[in-house]
Image 1 (cartoon, rainbow, N blue to C red):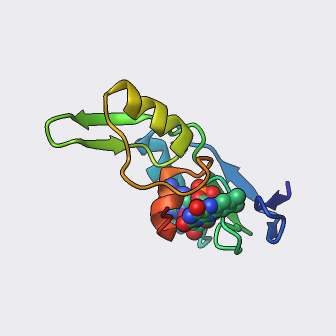
Image 2: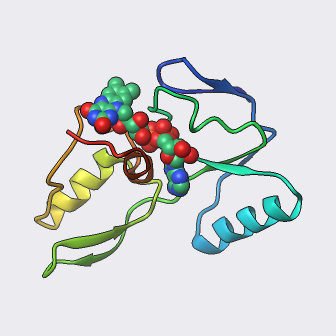
Length: 121
Ligand SMILES: Cc1cc2nc3c(=O)[nH]c(=O)nc-3n(C[C@H](O)[C@H](O)[C@H](O)COP(=O)(O)OP(=O)(O)OC[C@H]3O[C@@H](n4cnc5c(N)ncnc54)[C@H](O)[C@@H]3O)c2cc1C
């Protein structure tokens, strides 16, 4: 398959795409790829304008690794699976009476992609 970022400025043809559904499966993918001497790169939503999410060997598709794992309402903190999009997270937080204090101008990014690149408003 051919992967492309949102802007169409970066393309890649990963040899393998892994779609884990649990931390155990994620660990198995990473260990297996490392044992084979290859490299794995996690995909967010592909909204970075550079090629930082481009994977030529193994890609980690985390679209099945989403949602809030834990919520600490007293301290207003949540633990979120890395493939969760900001759009999904905003709705889940709203249901808990919480919200993020700072957002960019779109909500398509994953939480891991946003944190990795310092996405801000
Ligand atoms: C239309 C548009 C509007 C935007 N507006 C803003 C804005 O207002 N403010 C702003 O700051 N930025 C903005 N951006 C930039 C965007 O927020 C960042 O590029 C963000 O990283 C995109 O998140 P993503 O999920 O698409 O990550 P990707 O681009 O897919 O990945 C980014 C990096 O994170 C890594 N990564 C992703 N998931 C994981 C994971 N689970 N574990 C480890 N590493 C991971 C990837 O390997 C890659 O290195 C905008 C981009 C677009 C296209």
